[in-house]
Length: 290
Image (cartoon, rainbow, N blue to C red; front, side):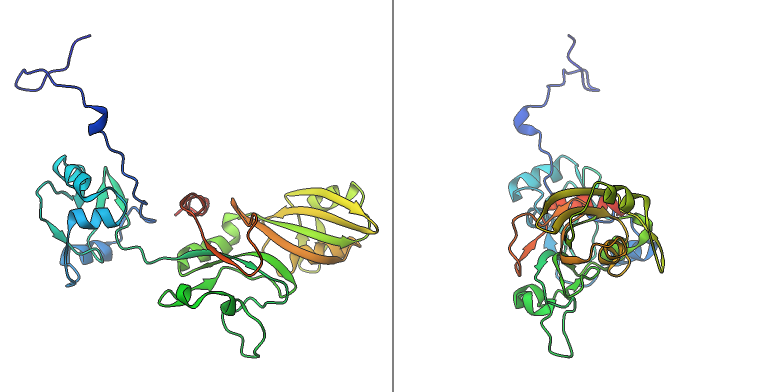
């Protein structure tokens, strides 16, 4: 096999495995910029500037030494221009940085958490009537400076997964019917259900505000006059699961939301909060086109 040659005719040596580096940085949520963002990046924000390799290291791209190698190799762009010289300083608040063509989030203040909301807690960050609310369950260190709010609601008697974030765009899209984000519930109902309930829920239940349909239904257990159902649907109407089951003659005794899209509650204990991991966040953004 012939070895490729450079323009001057000398053989080009194949890259060593140790020379190949793939960025581990978190891609920015928005890869493309508005005109205002472009102008702001070109003007600069007047904040203190930081060495580019330090910014890349802080963003999780690589160590400072490896970041210097990426810069020297021409793999880093700042505001659309390749930067190869060392010592360049940038403003992480306004400058746009890309590694291998992918925009890197170098100043990400967005926060994403999952709360396992207990029964009896209201879906508000502050309750004027003094009732137990979501805000009381979120540690003050999580709320400070982040402006967290809950995505959608769970009624006080419903337990389970509630997303908390300060990312308004993601929250709006997750709640918008256009994107059809699925939600999964475990419902304990009064009465021993038959297989026909699967057909009834999937074909649709006629409610006072229109027909509501489940995407998937599973009978998990039937015992001593009660039944446990797993119901997945993308409906977002108020009390939709309770209303569907009541209409079919099976009033809900307990209801837990266990999953939103691919984000699962798992073994998380009631009243606790955890941060979304990178794969969960990526999956949500992909689902809503961000």
